[in-house]
Length: 361
Image 1 (spheres, helix red, strand yellow):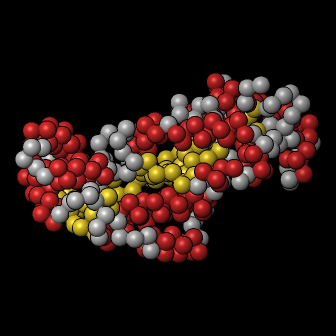
Image 2 (tube, rainbow, N blue to C red):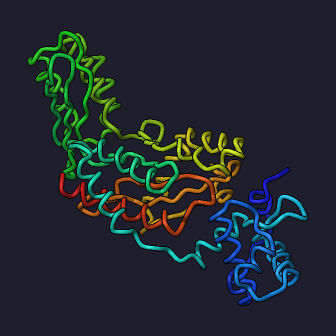
């Protein structure tokens, strides 16, 4: 049978202005109970929760809410649960968002501070923080590098590793640890650095990768073979370019199986995992968040990416100390995420990541 959360999304949905105080109160209680339990909510549950109406009167109101496209049911005699349109109405108009606790603030700040010295370390840790605190899968997309390159350098780290350092015109410094090709000498490291500095200065990574690829073919005879490979590996190590090339960090998939209700619906969880694997679409969705002023919420069938699994994404942009938006970070999970807790966690983590980047610039 079609999931009522999905099927009912095609029905017309109401606005808060169309609901009287009784319908609004019952609707709010149904959604809150569903988000807490994950189970369909019956009229007797609502009547026992402090609503001074008979179960029959409550059922009539629930039927009205169903006809408005805000509630759905697996079958006629079952309790009701909110549709995606109903969840959207609740989140936009009735949700009381909490604040981040002092304990969570300290956890976020401490873990980001201890994440290491590279930008990648910070992004990995930020996504891990959200997956742990919010109970879903933490997702973060690496920035679009649209600033010009100012300086490139390769530094030897032992016999089998090198550190690739790239400084951009906007002041951001990115470091990438990479394998050091066999036979590479200090002279080859300098040769590779000089080659890139002569050709990348002022160009974006997307422009540089095209130019250098063609140039390498012409210069390969003149360049040391190991230096040429180092250049190719170094360019590949840096993030940038379009969605197909940029890195998508996902942490905490196991959290999606930790919910007994989710385990009971393994097919939905499988489809949710499929959503996570749709790298280009998910990066595109997160890039939409980059233009937002704060947290954005995508619920189920509102987006093509989540139309089958009925997942939800809560995401916020993160920015450099110069207030330039770089990317987005968020949490993906079932639609019954704890929105009141997750929304402020995502917002605070994004801002903390930005503050940390400001210190490192």
